[in-house]
Amino acid sequence: MKSTAANNTFGEYVNRSGTANSYKCPQCGSRAKIVTTKVITTQTREKYYQCTNLHCSSTFVTYETVDRWIIKTKSN
Image (tube, rainbow, N blue to C red; front, side, top):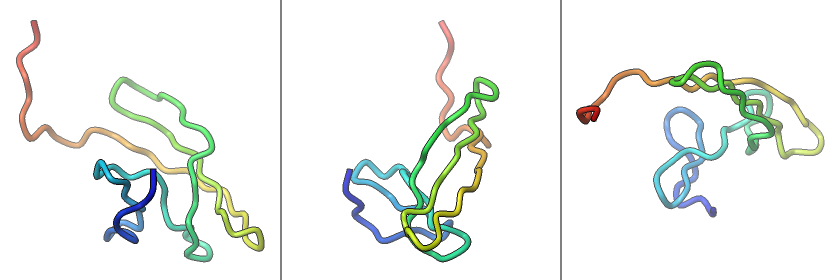
């Protein structure tokens, strides 16, 4: 999906649905895209990113985890 905002305060590029689909490269500031995602737990993911700048091509890892619920639904 195409980005609607250049980035947010975390350096993420945000798509039309409002979810982050890439990060800014911490090395050069260019867009980095998700290469692989590993499930660590039911609430944690490890994401591998690679910079799209051919002169940089850095690869880095982020962790995505549930921090808190805004509204938690009842389980059936």
